Length: 450
Ligand SMILES: Nc1nc2c(ncn2[C@@H]2O[C@H](COP(=O)(O)OP(=O)(O)O)[C@@H](O)[C@H]2O)c(=O)[nH]1
Ligand SMILES: [Mg+2]
Image (cartoon, rainbow, N blue to C red):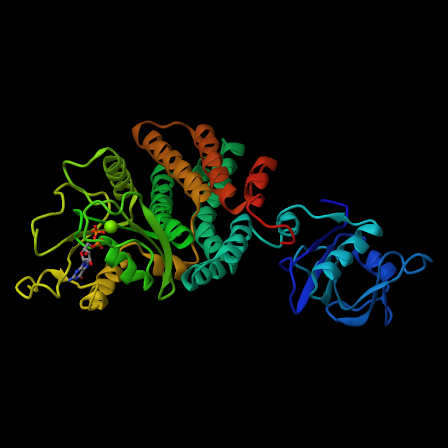
């Protein structure tokens, strides 16, 4: 456990109604007591009770020390604080300078400036949070949409941990029985039947698969759903892009080849983050620069989560026929020009009159439903690359072990060793098993003060 006392501004830098400075560590109360003049503030201080007073620039006994702010000091004594250590939070006037001076005052009495995510890291090390819960804190801070917030808070409340425990517990139980039978080789009845081991492993595999199925949703909740508008030149891609965003972002013109580079914009629609990409029109005989734009279009199309493939009445068959990795919604544009094309089965829109846009949004929402965001949010399982990587490794180790057990009898010792390795992969997801390097990579995403 870290033994020093750390300090940081917990609220954003800048002018505001309040600024909160957080001081955490074994010396937090003593340091606060040296800076703070208010009602009794010493070792007998009551936890979770805010006290009003004046904060000094350094030890208030020093002659050179002077008052810097009127604050509320909130002591949160171990283990009942965010970090699990003694913590004092100062609620200061929200000025840029005042808050900085409060941090400087804490440093003057011996506190060390906190690194990024250091409070949360301490919370993890003190058993207040699992690693996936700590990651949910970062997701919550970075969230751009309601859906992301709802998923992150469920994960913070233990959603992912429940799912992980449901996989881990039967395997831990199995391991202890296998290890038990290794100790008592003489007693036949303690041996765990292979069928039972295989059965439990297959159940775990199925549960890991259920979690892995949530991986795309995790990425989409965090990064947004990337929707690419593609189709031939002049079909109305840029016009639709502007209409969807309800702002005049991309240049619209009757001249083919107007859009040459990919233009991207984020939009939160009904609680979900979308990233729309307007692209250069796809045609066979482009000029040199336009060709570069078209190459970028294909790249975006291949990376898309959803493709809106546009064609228009002048050129109804357009829209390159190829297979797309992402779901495709075919859209007929310029519906205001041509009534004949308003057939059933075709989504007809006009960026000029707005006709068909609600139906297009409904089609987008339907396609998005396939990504299972709502399920991930409800379960509180917002997987990131790290979780995905570990779960996939765990899945493949489980499969190897099942294969071993089904093809020949590897013996309890080998089974036990392989099972321990599966459990340590799983343990890294929740942080039950961790290395310094793992913590470094997780907490570098955090801001200072969290
Ligand atoms: N009547 C009509 N014209 C449109 C519509 N959408 C785009 N256009 C026109 O079609 C031309 C090409 O539009 P643009 O959005 O630049 O097409 P892009 O090349 O696919 O990006 C412009 O002259 C637009 O004004 C529409 O819904 N109705
Ligand atoms: Mg365009």
